[in-house]
Image (cartoon, rainbow, N blue to C red; front, side):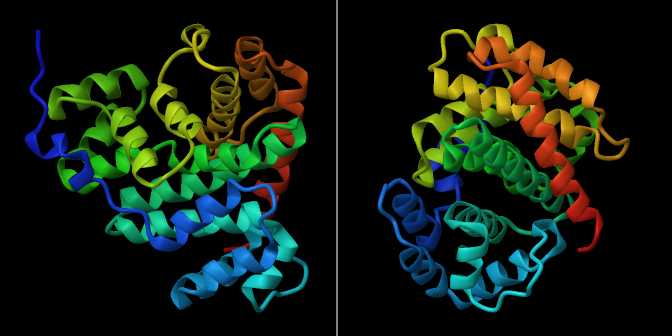
Length: 280
């Protein structure tokens, strides 16, 4: 049985928001080995609204800075280029989509997932910028569908969002394709690494279907699976046992050590969630 794709969604280059110049330039800079702090700060400072938002975000409780920073350069020095660039990327995403309760929830989860994946990647010696970008864009296809159907899609998400298979089937029935295709296309439109787009596309797959994917993608999928367990439990407090259980399920497929993955993710979750609970 064939499914008709909504004609408006066929023109992905038209439907997908273009990458802001600052985020595109930052993506290029972070791909280089010798990028300097002044280069990153200069790109962000080129957009006054973006620069002020970065400083405000860095000073929030989420990041646990002990002394208030007042410039982008200070923010980069305190947090590092990767996390400040990720803040810029997140803000670029927020600005590209009209605000709504569903969008706000998506981007709040994106910030937390990106932080967890990026910091866990650092601990495990993985490519942290790609991991953090993957976390930020994980649900971006859902944002595209919200933009396309601002009333119908949030209702569908509330109704079918409990199980991934049900959500994908409902999206396909309603729009002719599901959110992971749109999310991967958005990653490519914004100039992100191929591994990030592949992560977003493959994220709904169960671990037993990761085997054919390149190892860097499998590693990001494992990081994302653990981060999702932590984020999904935010209303009921996740347990170390739940994190260990998912790590034992996904780590072998990704060629990772389950104990190391669980320990690193839990350690960064405790730091991030403690800071977030303190304010904002």
